[in-house]
Image (cartoon, rainbow, N blue to C red; front, side, top):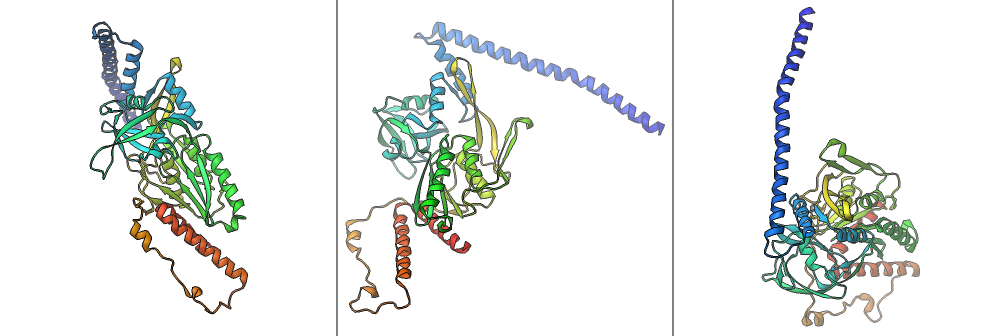
Amino acid sequence: MKKYLMASAAGILAGGLISVQLAAPIIAQESDRTTNVYEQLDLFGDVFDRIRREYVEDVNEEDLIEAAIDGMLSSLDPHSSYLSPKDAAEMRVQTSGSFGGLGIEVTQEDGFVKVVTPMDGTPAYVAGIEAGDFITQVDGQSIVGLTLGEAVDLMRGPVGSEIVVTVVREGVEEPFDVSIIRDTIKLTAVRSRIEGNSIILRVATFNQQTYPNLADGIEKGIEELGGLDNLDGIVVDLRNNPGGLLDQAIKVSDAFLNEGEIVSTRGRELADSSRVNAKQGDLAQGKPIVVLINGGSASASEIVAGALQDHHRAVVVGTKSFGKGSVQTVLPLRQDGAMRLTTARYYTPSGRSIQALGVSPDIVVNQPPRELPTDEEVAEERPVRSEADLRGSLGNDSLSEDERRQIEEEREKAEETARLRDEDFQLSYALDLLKGLSKLEK
């Protein structure tokens, strides 16, 4: 026992000596790093001073400093950026649901400005801008090589003014110009409507209006259908939704879940990690849900799709989402400016990160390009005759008038869904799926 204690003490003493011996190099390394940082800051000061004194034209010192800050942030990742006092004020307006501009969410990819999505009903959407488009010129001026902030500044302008953007699109051989009239963007976060016996919730963005709009749409839809028993299910359409407020994505996910994790975030330090769980209360009361996504579904949209998919609460239909799995925190700075800084990654309930991978749909359904029928095809369309159209045909004696009326109503609804296939194949597929799930449930 004495030998054991002595050996232990010797080990502790030796450990203490090693700690003392290692401490000096570590302190020296920290000192070297600090010295190097100060040297780099001195270098920045020298460059700044030389530009002020020797550049061919007078420069605005404030603009130089802002450009340096923005360059430092944008070098980190495509979503970190500096917000001038004006930009910070505009961002606060955007999250409340109304702002001026073109109505596109953009990012930067390999030095090019890429459209994440055009927002529903905005000038860019009406003009035909699509998710995945690359914008190479603004009013004939190349924006290749500019920072994302600089490119966005070129696209800003007075409401009512015209802008011409040059677009490169996959599958189109030559770049082409698109004329857009700038306007005040008033986003309705969620539009709801009834198709057949299903509620369609078109979620365009995640701002302060999103959850209230969604809850109201579900309530009114159930009332319009005459009660929950008549509801086949709900389509949550997240296509071309660029994301927005994290808390709204959590609330929308929670609207359809009774328990379990919704999302977790993991920052640089363990203390920066968090996990959010669902509370009791499913607004759809267990009815089937289909979530529609595509390549323009990003960030908050992916949180919702991933949470409902992992809990097997919804069938996800469409094409792979954008793959933005990072969280940005807006940090206020002096003089009313701010910086948008990537502070964490988020993970779905199963622990998977969506960053650069996106959410893969349970059922892949591509949206075929819409083709207008030719005159010959229209001419060939003739009504199909049936037994009931023949003169003197026998009637059906197995049905009452009420049963016959119900069959006719169901047939009309099915034909409406079929017509929808030509307009929006993915949505039509989702409605057919809901109808099938509802029949199995019953």
